[in-house]
Length: 196
Image (tube, rainbow, N blue to C red):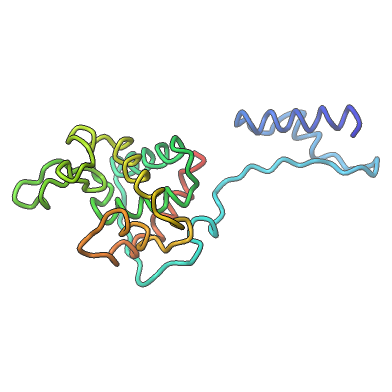
């Protein structure tokens, strides 16, 4: 590779890495016709994760969808950030968000009085009495996500399971198939926010 092409490739890669916008001389250089007969490197920004990675087996059954408010969107972003912190792939975020959509509609729920399911709290309706952590920990989105994903990592083959099966194995819900309805919205949320 000649020095000029190498510098151009490194320059484009540097801009893409820092999130820069192609403008000025870089854009002009990229638009130049190739006259030397040598290939020109083109940097492509990955906008969204691959749908095949997000929903490897397609969705199961009828899908539900809710409109998210700012708090719910912030909670979804917190789940994605915790997933990245755990070093897990996008599929783990889809399973986590789908689980939270079923358990709390992405709302960080405190004690609900008579409507509470035992002592369930937070985004995943985890229970202090079942060893998930203290009420303060469980209502911390990062902690609760990492706790859920710690359980997920202990499930053999979770990456290749339908969302509802993976979620149920961790959550042990009385309604094991209920998670399936959120797979498409969870995947859409991850696709929208994973790289933002």
